[in-house]
Length: 377
Image (cartoon, rainbow, N blue to C red; front, side):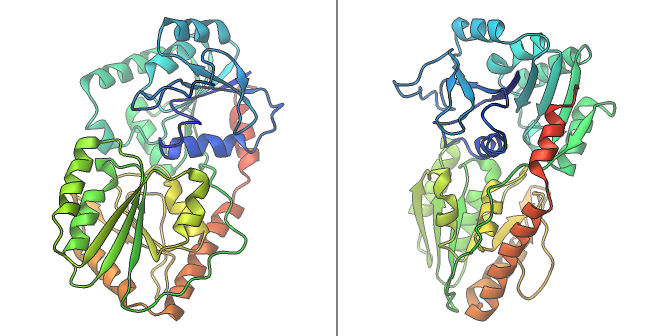
């Protein structure tokens, strides 16, 4: 049995990219692949499962067809984990900081595959509590006595694992599986002297929404920003709201709330560009999904995505260094996009779609993940 352990999963669709990552892996395997999902019975705001869901019991997942169990955070959940997993089961753990869900499987199984999902980024570890650092030290000790295969989704994450757990760790670099690009991307008309932007992601300090809002307010031409995403950091969102409410600029802002991930491509197709000034992104599903429908992106240089400099690029990078974004560069990109005519924009859109297609076609995802899950054979 292969147990895939993830902190949140459907029906909690508002926890961001990690759900998308696991969902896309499972879609590549048939329901007779002997895979079981173990996940929390509440979301990150402690919102419980709908009443028709059963906890601590293996059932068929309505979304992927695989087996799933929603594990409670109480002793009954720990007992369920203890009786469900044995020493020879393969345990694929997504993320690190959910000991109520991860620790017992780590202690029991001798065949561990660990995917940090971006949680070892230096800027995030610097914000990590003392308790989490103690937990990381405990994991380092436990892993000395286990067969551990690490899964890095980028070369940068490979370095982060080495930095946190040492040079002797066994690591395979396999990309996240994105959604399939649309065969026919959007048909869109971009008028000069207009700019319609979208932010699509969790609302947390690390994603740079506040900087985005402040920069757009400083422009001397009209621009609109629609904001999609669940609020995870409520104090940070209050700062964003203060900037939005105290707005005498030419910029307009509209908070759209959480969007169903299945609607992401159709939503992202309706804007001139996606903007995500993230301070660190392990993959960035919304970035790829924008490209996959022909929507160019404006992102920080702290993601895996890179674009060629040209008159009509698929996207633009904004440097982040010394705790500051290069706002001058950001404004230059915005100004260029604001004044861009439809002919040039159509080339940007075509290049964005081709970029996504090339990435998707360059990987045999099923073969790579099959090899990963067979690491102990």
